[in-house]
Amino acid sequence: MIREVAYQTLPRAERARLHAAAARWYETRAIGREVELAEIVAYHFREAVSLAGAGTTTVPADLVQAAVRWLIRAADVALASAANVEAVRHLRAAAELAEPAQLADLYEKIGDAFASVEAADAYRRALELSREVGGSADQQLRAIAGLLHVHLRTGGMGGQPPAEADITRLMREGNELVAEAFLAAQSFYPFWLLRNSGRVPGPADLDLAEGRARRALEIARRARDVRLQSAALDASGSILSLRGDHRAARELARERIAMGQALDLRERLDAYTVATWYSIYLGELEEAIRTSAAGLAVVQPGQAPGWTLHMVSWRTLALMLSGLWDEAVEGAERARTLWIESGRGAAGYALHGFLAGLAVAHARRNDAQLERFREPLDAIGTVVGHQGRKHSLEFLSHDPLEPDHYLRYFDQRQPETIQLAIAFASDRDTPPPERLLERLRAGDRYASTPLVEAEIARALGLLRRDPARLTEAIAVFERCGAVPSAARARCERAMLTGDQAELRAGVAVLDRLGDARQLARFKVKAV
Image (cartoon, rainbow, N blue to C red; front, side, top):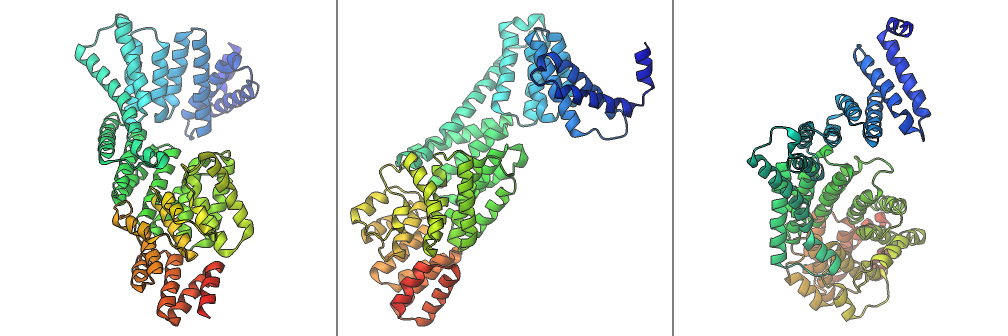
């Protein structure tokens, strides 16, 4: 009684402060003793938040988070000893303080703790809350499973049984959620085929995958599962890209970006990366650089290094192609750091970024950078392999390549890889065989990637000594903002036409870039 009188004489703010201090004190001593002290720590945090919230001051967010965390821990301790009623009390107290995104999980735990008809109410509330915040299909599926267990396995625990239509609806919704995740995953099969097996998916493959992606998106939207909506949109985008419609594919990536913080960080980074990727395919290099910069702004140092590496790699390629070579080297250095931070893994998705950095180092004859960027290229290439084919790295070499080697290399390559390989070969005056270039030009595989088309035209112009083909290539390079390629093609055209003014203008751009190898190539010929 004396303690209660003394306690009641303290102002609310002082009581809140003392409870918080007591909670922090116990918390420091709870390591290894959570089972013993969880309820005490939770009590003091809850009282601190409750008393502070009754006043005029704002309750610190970290205090609220700590209270929720310890109330959940206290509930787990109670459940472990089968003290279900006590556990539910802690969980309900946590639900009063938790953020909206945490509520579905809390009500699911309440449902798990009950052994009565009230479990169905908790699972139903968990399902509603998950749908309100766009929770995952897995989360919603667990809530539906909990409801069905209560109603079907336990007979409702004595409560009013639901209508058969309600049970049928729940079972249908659960099956759809299972199908949604499976369909979304299946929709990426054509993308996997091309990237990993080297086989180009046929129209039937694409039609089947497109139908699956569309169905997965419908179910995800109905379930308000934003993460699987994003995955289904990504799958649809990959199919559109394989069909050659990179612009429509990019719009789906932008739709994913617009979901903002409703997506987890990895999914958001992937959306920015894919939008950057398709912008490069479209030859819109400035847009690629702008999109990747916006993507990098959402990630903090140390977060998701593998996903950040993917985005940095595409950004580095865009910077290199644009002639922003100092920034490209910085990008390649950052990619190397991220590769190391993520465990030096088989990051085949990052090869083009390291190759872009290596291309700049090669052009500038910077041996130190050549070694730094060759290391991850060699290490990754050794692990993932290239289905018996060489990477574009070989085309930087000055060793002659046999015609049949070109044919093996160019079999079903990705647009960015084809583009770099043709460019590197032309840079050393050894373009690919004419019959191969004509085969690429006649097909529709690269018809929607302007920079590939431009490199094919440039290579044909060199082989045939045809200024018109080089003019065609220059127009595309300049429209896309591919400064180094445009300068090289201008120098090549000038060598054919004898236009010394154009040669000097092209050499001036190469000199500004520090392109020592091409300067030597053209200055020797110009003398």
